[in-house]
Image (cartoon, rainbow, N blue to C red; front, top):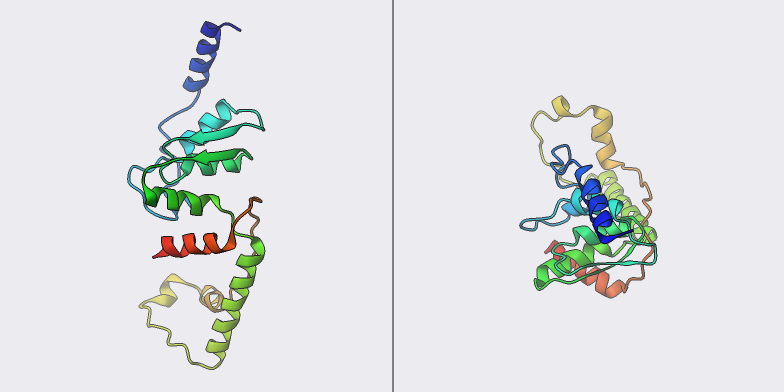
Length: 175
């Protein structure tokens, strides 16, 4: 294939996408973990990676990764990623977004929190604030679910993590 033909194919592929993305959800999933100015909407890198999917052994490099949107989208497609940014906050957000949380950690922590909450509720030691018109907005079954939630395990892509660094990053981002 000649360079000119390749460029024409690229141009055609780019014109098949409606780049408006007006239907796209705002602040969805992991991308909503922290605000970041001029955040890249995930649909753009997602579509570009789908259109020009590198081989499965390729690495996606984002030299101005910001909050890691392209990195997350590439990882969701099973690709390895590298991101670089000069902004330390951007690097922190990107690290947190691209470091999977082990399901066992999430499930175990959730169970402990639920157990503690149920114990406090059974002792009537929890001060539940008054919520005006609560019955108007939520059925009794939904209100009860707040106090007795079910634990639903969620899978995470496997990627090696350093537990102490992961905890530090998440706590830093929360602060």
